[in-house]
Every structure is written in structure tokens, then in C-alpha cells.
Length: 138
Figure 1 (cartoon, one colour):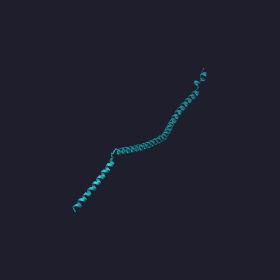
Figure 2: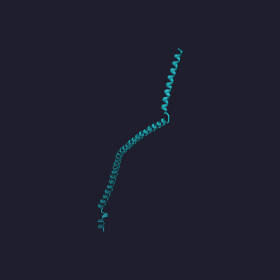
Figure 3: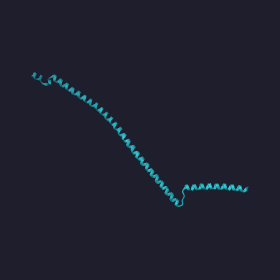
Figure 4: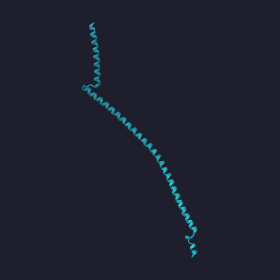
């Protein structure tokens, strides 16, 4: 019976060593695969970050260009609106002034100009009166 026990695979020391060696190689291969996957993940993550930064830079430029374009359009519309408003205001002023003149109501500028003319005439009249008085005394 001892011959039969020696021929069983469980009792073969070489087979046990081979199985143990294979198990160790499988374990080491697993550790190597894990390490490789971890390294690749780090590089992959770094590459994703780098590509994200590049995309952000590209999109930032596009967005800033669009913002400038919109600002330019808004400025153009603002300028046209301001010009239109100024023209409307001028037309309104002219029409109101015309209506006031037709009603016999003078503008402030007209009144100020007339007041200045009156003051100048009064000054001239005073000079003339002053010179007439000195002529009569002689």
C-alpha cells in the first residue's frame, strides 16, 4: 500500500513545489497588474487634467471673443439710440419754441438779450444826458 500512497499527487513533493511556485507567480502577476493599473490610472488622470486645461483655454478664448462681440453690438445700439434720442429731443425743442413764439411767448435767451440791449441803451442815454448837462452849464 505504501507504493500506492507514493504515487498519489498529494504526496509528490515536486508537484507540491510546482503548485506553490505557480501560485506565487500568479500572486506576483496580480501585484504587478495592480501596480501597473495604478500607474496607468495616475498617468491617465494627469492626461485628462491636461486635456481639460487645454479645452478650458480654448473655450475661454471663444467665450471672451463672444463677450467682446456682444459688448460691441450693445455699444453700437446704445450709440444709435442716443443719437436718435438727441434728434428727437432737438425736434421737440424746436417745435415747442415755435409754438411759444406763435403764442407771443419769448424764450429766456430772447429776454436776456433784450435786457442787455435795454441796459446798453440806458447807459448810452445816461452818457448823453450827462454831456447835455455839462454843455448847458457852459
